[in-house]
Amino acid sequence: MLSDIERRELEEAVQHYSEKRGAAIDALLTVQRHRRWISDESLLDIAQFLEMTAEDLDSIATFYNLVFRKPVGRHVAFVCDSISCWIMGCEQIREQLKKHYDIDVGQTTRDGRLTVLPIACLGHCERAPAMMIDQDVYGEVAPDKIDIIMNKYK
Image 1 (cartoon, helix red, strand yellow):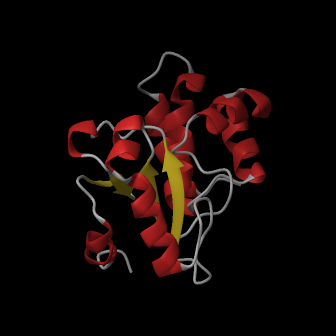
Image 2: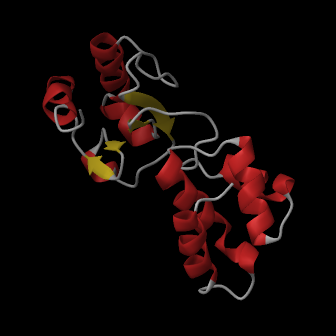
């Protein structure tokens, strides 16, 4: 069930579209901001609010890589694996995260602090390798910078 706050925010979001379903991504991200991920129950509630099928909404949710259909940590670190970032050492960034947090890409730390996910491109090619934590993008990331960056996300 959508909370009163979520419902108010969704009502506001749909005002910007000629059809309710046009606000699908906004609606998914709104509910995710409150719950950290989109459960099957949340998806059904959002679909009903938007007057669309759950299947149609799920196809949008699973296509858009910033919508989480599985639980994630308090912070999500996206490691860019585009060709530019790969050439410049994104694998070293992933290895440092794995070593420091004892998790692989696609996993969440035991304490629920961090989830590490791949992303195809952050649009930061001129500053590769790049990573994004929550909404903060970092460029020219080196393994020795990981601890400094991650200290901001406890």
